[in-house]
Length: 251
Length: 251
DNA sequence: ACGCATTCTCAGGGGATTCACAGGAACGGG
DNA sequence: CCCGTTCCTGTGAATCCCCTGAGAATGCGT
Image (cartoon, each protein chain N blue to C red):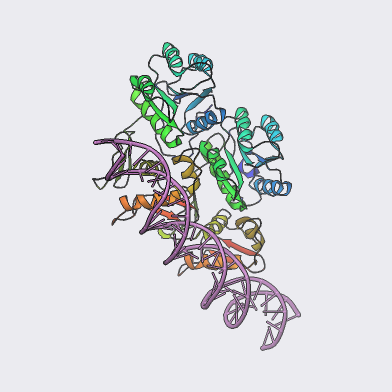
């Protein structure tokens, strides 16, 4: 039914597919309904087939019948703790990669134990761009899905390259150091080349879902990025006054 | 079958159709009746099948039976808030794209997240042209409807091109810089080539619905546009004295 | 605890954009 | 050919949008 890709940004992007040919399947487990909803939408937007559960029991049940290729799992659930859910999950799906969601102040060693198997985690509040990127990384590396995957981790726009695995950025072969936020912003731009992105879109996607600050942080970080990648070169980041920003190869 | 198009403007325009063959269905949800009416008319004018609801409960009910291909949703509703409506809506129609309407000065942080799924939004007061353009974009990208879709983001009239994604405009291959208002005006003209558009129509469509200024802004902006796209070339923007303006390829 | 990196707020400034106004040009009917 | 109407466009002011420096607050590693 979802045969056509529901992605809206980045129409030319290669679509991740599972071996059978259908879209990658992801299970979202979180008891905060709005957050689960937000995540589900963002992941569907990637072209993935998403289901969600609000507690551990539901997660196990859904895992059994849905057989997802990846799981996004909140470690704080009402009925059972993260470790228990993980154990039962692995009973059903031994090799499924898991992305944990955890509060900032959670005990670090617990997480370290959970992610020992090559899984990953992000702390709340997270940005959607970050969750999607981590999940893509997990799926790609797991090898169970991810068939139609080229050199997926490298984004290229003109002579500008960004490696989503190593987080290395270079323009004209010369390496460029970016901070975490700068990197996320540039990744979002580069994943949508030649497309005007409004400041609101950027804010929604790159900043945490609970960010309540001034909207001009976007302008500020665009300014930072330009200093680092557009200095003394044909500029690639362009302003569309009244509309937003876009990145494109100089020409 | 395209000849049976109910559109009144632009007979040659490709008509968006849903997979079954019928017109695209859109649900408008807004408690301000005049505004809902205005929107509905503008969307019917696009050849779409439109229904409207004045509150969240009505929206859910209508979504269930009407099964729209897209939804226009005011985030401020009398009975429930935007996120709640969105949640219930998605319960009925998991993949329907949503265009949010929001007040300019609304609390920004409640918007953040709403648009995460690839949805979009416009701030009040908006122009109808903007709403229609955004909605077309959402429908086109959602893939559920949008069958008769070519290279939709590019408008072409003679040697003049306008890209709705990158906001780039060129005549004879040469790039042209337009301001936001000039861009919207040209888009409206190009979406209705060879058709006379009255100043009133243009004002209603391109300017915000609460614009209270002088009617000759249209003349002024036509003048701006001519300087930029018709300078020293066979003119494409023509005046029909007493009637309005139209754009057509020189010849 | 200390220093450095990073994130973000605030505010000033500059330039682009929008728009009103008004005089002049073009048009069309008589 | 005259005149009223409609349209075009120069000028200028107000506003809006965007850029960026300075510095506070926070986080992070040593």
